[in-house]
Amino acid sequence: MRSTVSGIATAPDRFAFGENWSRFAQLLDEPRIEEAASSLRSMLEVDDLGGRSFLDVGSGSGLFSLAAARLGVGKIHSFDYDAESVACTAAVRDRFFADKDDWLVERGDITDSAFCADLGTFDIVYAWGVLHHTGALWRALDNTCGLVAPGGSLFVSIYNDQGRRSERWRTIKRRYNTLPDGLRTPYALLVSAPSEMSTAARRLIRGRFRSYVRSWSESGPRGMSRWHDLLDWVGGYPFEVARPEEVFRFCRDRGFELQKLTTAGGGLACNEFVFIRSGKPQAQDS
Image (cartoon, rainbow, N blue to C red; front, top):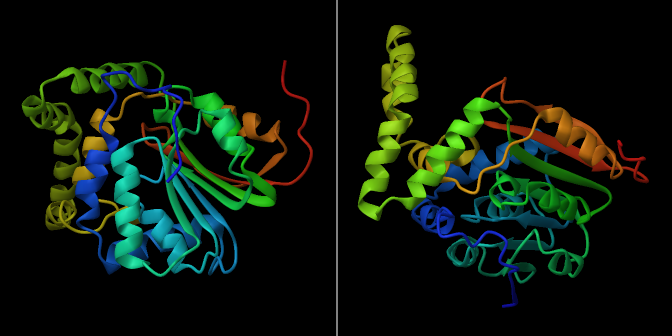
């Protein structure tokens, strides 16, 4: 296994993403895998991915590489900065697709231009909730754009810029990672309590409180886990944000056309983009 990591985000207060996703991977089952595959079909607006190549930038648990495999992708290349995430993705591959010889898993850094130049290009490049955790968002997005083959698709999600609210959460996230291990979970529960209480109250008023309780154990959107997503949200540092129009202009200037956009509705979640690499880069804004 090749290991190429430039060391951009090695701060001691960096969140242990791989540790969190390794715990999540123990929950993987058919409903979660199907939900993940369904989210790929929906955003990419395809029924299957037969014969296409797929690059999973920051593969995390490996769930979406697995979902791509289930949709018939040919070549899969998964990489992550976090060594535990790499091991988790490899374990998921070996558990569900041990006979897929054209699924490569390795360690690498999307902010490392030399590493990225070595990868080649792919029909589908998937970078969901990853680039804003590198500590070098725009360099990471620039490198990611270069990995998309002509006519290929770029599926990327980036945290929405909420100004002062985003700054407040950056402080919360950094503080989480400076706490002793035993205090991190209580801290995560404390800082997320206001929004969770609000959600629970709304569900109660609408007579749907049981669905709120079930949401903590059942498969959520994209096949994810509410608890592990909460830890990823509270602890996810480094943390950067961008406005939708910033991402649009950045990719447009590199020869991409926006095919689909799902925004966070003005909230703190991720804006999701699907771009098609369609032609020559446009003149960049001054």
